Image (cartoon, rainbow, N blue to C red; front, side):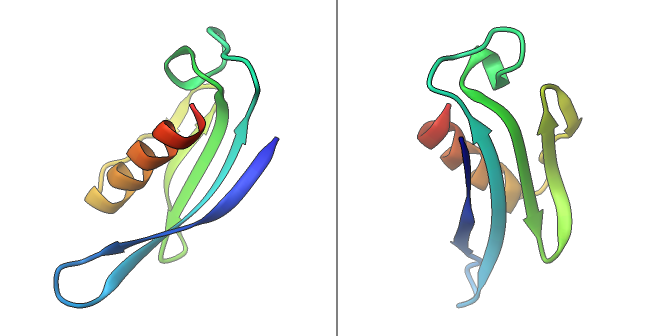
Length: 80
C-alpha cells in the first residue's frame, strides 16, 4: 500500500520546515526488503523540492539533515 503526505516541523524561528513523503508499506515485515526488516520497502522524503532521503529496498540517500531525520523517525514509528 502507498501512503503520502507531509510533516511540518517547527524551525524554532516561528517558521516550519515541510517534509513531503511517499512510502510503500506492507502488512507483514520483510527481512529482505524492509527497512530494518520492517514493513517499509520504499520511502522518499523531499524538503523544499530536494530529495533528502530515498530507500528503495536498500539505501540510495540516507537522511542527513535534522528535518529529514525527524520525519524518518516519525514514519518508522507509523509504518514500520
